[in-house]
Image: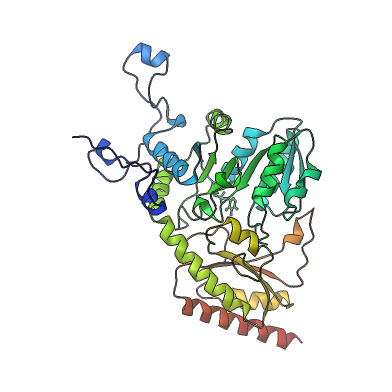
Length: 398
Ligand SMILES: *Cc1c(COP(=O)(O)O)cnc(C)c1O
């Protein structure tokens, strides 16, 4: 007996996360869509083959497993459609290649994820696309930077490492009047905390590597688009065939079901930790948009429904040696790139190394934290001991 999955339109977000992209009674009642591996798809007749008359036609164009995640992501993003990519950065490059051509101009936020910048300055430049970096806080004044050939305005909020809040609706309104496509890297908030297409974004990118995984155990990218942009995005995806492996897509579906719970817990833990860090004598500034002291707080409050587990602090001036003394012997915080997993991480950063449109000179070392799911008291003790090593190293040097 066949039974249809529930209609999701009027259901809550958590119910949608649980049910989207699933049809158990099409697969012998098993709850999860299985991993379809494959290249060749067989057609029953010559006519079907010659006219590609089938739901699936070849491995690179999709399988029931990839379609399940695309459908679910489209649903929770409020998009017209979604394509997948083998990493978050692949999702970024796919979105840019889809909407830019030789002779075009690209407006790129100066606070963007650094590898996106490397793609613009290398590959896009080679193909005749000019990139102008702009101040992330520009808002509607972006009008002054738009040229007749500006095809894409790329945004990311909050900014990578430095957490500037962009006024996405204001930027989108100006860009749309000009005919440009608005792309956003929405990895920090996910569609659960920032519904991109409702806020004026045409094409939204998510590094599924982060919170869709929640376990630092796979790489995946997702690109959702509205009605205006999905066809072009899908055509470009099919041309590149940058498809992720089936295991990773399956793990993405698995992560999706619990993503809301995990995000809320990361949010709670990170807010508590950010406030605690704000009371530390070694800390000059906490860069977390959900704190009232953050310059972008009003925008965050207006446009976002939550905050995730990633934020930064600026330390009071100390030596590189003292910083290393703090970080090298942390027992619970790991040091390494990426984030979004169950484990807490810290990385030192310096935006001054690469920014071109804005100045980064906060007067002390930057530290970016991802707060995981450990007991907060344990994490605070680890940092407390780290700060003691930092003070010690600094006073010995003095
Ligand atoms: C991590 C990250 C990416 C890239 O994701 P990968 O899967 O590591 O390639 C893109 N954008 C942002 C904002 C990220 O944090």
